[in-house]
Amino acid sequence: MIRGHAIDLAFDVAGRGPPVLLLHGLFASAANWRSVADALASSYRVYSVDLCNHGRSPCAIDMSYLAMADDVLRLIEREGLRAPAVVGHSMGGKVAMALALTQPHAVERVVVIDVAPVTYVDHFSHQIQTMMDTLARQPDAAAGAAGMQPACPTGATLAHLMMPRLSAAQSYVDWRCNLGVIARSIQGLCAFPRHLRYLSTGVPLTAIVGARSECVQPPDPALYQPMFPCTTVKVIDGAGHWVHADRPRALLAQLRRALGAPGATQASRAA
Image 1 (cartoon, rainbow, N blue to C red):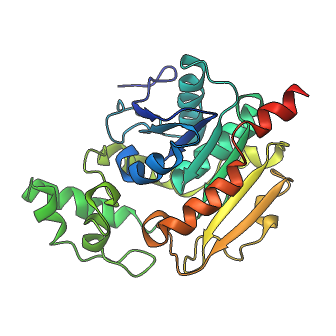
Image 2 (cartoon, rainbow, N blue to C red):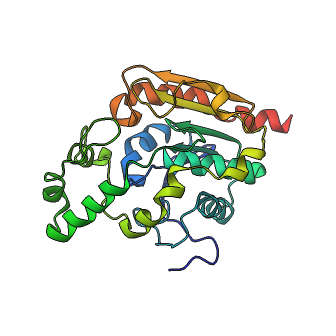
């Protein structure tokens, strides 16, 4: 599919209350965040989204952050959501920031998990090729993951990252990813759109950072400024990049603080 306009993303929805969108990271899907969505659904209406080329969403050649932000905006408009909060992990966090910078009216607040609007070193290209080669030899994903050895930036092997740690719902990788398009897009995904650095928005941003991760160093609001002058950074001890798997309870506590009491923002706006 060649993208000529925003696509209709697949998503799961649960709960009642102020809307919250959950955007997963690279190689993942909405399923990886099911436990977080279920916990938040007691207070919020949670939309767990599959970004393009991931999970059940359509494939698209254009996988730039601006294009993916347009996809999320289309979902917001299609569902008639009024300025939802957008929570994004890793790649999903960059999508959330791109959306807030280009369409600030559409977003009430942004929470990014272990990612900053910076360019990261490409540690993925070789690993993606290894994944594709392994799948070509072994169609069974679980068996194929066991044979992978290349190290990730954190020192963990792909085999470790692809197998469940806490439950099947928290596997790191969803094997429905369109690896070919991701491979062609990886340089842009490691970066952040340069021209967005000249934009600024008053949309509040909370960055939740894993203390053992190297992705947000130093964990300082200055990394997000001047794009997001209203930035708060929270560090979760004992967590690496996959904060939702390493410290799920601590992450949920920080998410609830960042999202605020349900209805509080709407009340203040009405006033």
